[in-house]
Length: 142
Image (cartoon, rainbow, N blue to C red; front, side, top):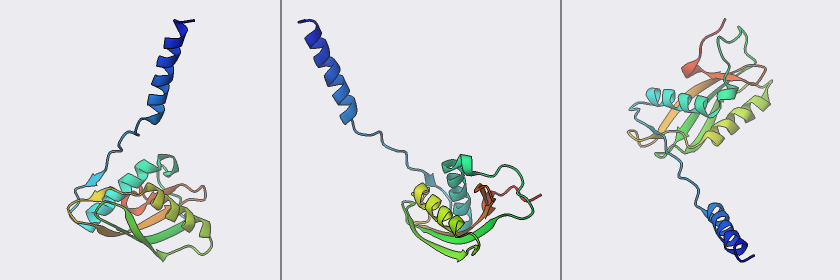
């Protein structure tokens, strides 16, 4: 019994140490873009990496379900400050909500280190399945 007690104490100490350990720091993505157009490409790649299962692979069908055109304003750390919806599909308000939510959940986007903040326009092409392509990285249509 005396052998068991120190073992339990050590096991308890190890478990509590693991549970109370500080979370590992996340690596901040940084964009070296010098223009809004170049930053748009970095942001698109970051969004694709954030939602790989939601990307429509290959060429889109001739008619997509919804097109959302928006302007995104990010601060110097990549945090989304504002999303201005320029064109929204009135027949698919759920798509507008989903796009806005995906952008906010992916935030912060890569920090525009050379620009001190960025504002760019992007076009989201959304299929009926909810999968999408961004105009910056689209594979085109059939």
